[in-house]
Figure 1 (cartoon, one colour):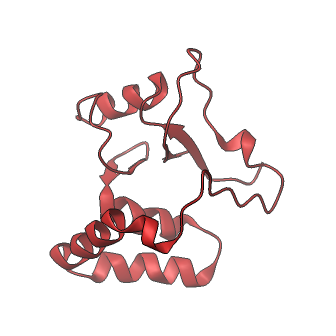
Figure 2 (cartoon, one colour):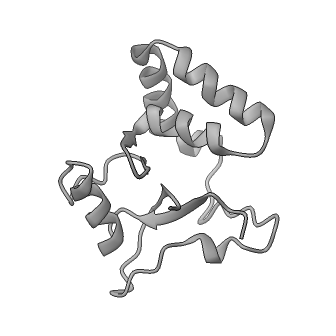
Length: 123
């Protein structure tokens, strides 16, 4: 499997454990979280770090640009998009399964609890 990113719902036991490990409340599901072995990133910082891990060069460039942008600007853009996301289109899911491995990228939760998906970097 060549996938470097895996997904876990923040409402799942796995997601709650990752929130606790990164110093957040397990009920803090207000934003996207990107967890690595060394650190955790939230909201716009998470998005830019995720983009830098993707294969598409324009998305990696976008992620790098995000890191070079002052945090108050980056966070303002993130909040605007977050608050107006349904203006960009509304779907029950946003699955783009280009390589047929989408389902395998979700971290299993023994309790079967699910919700909005957020990303975790695979070890």
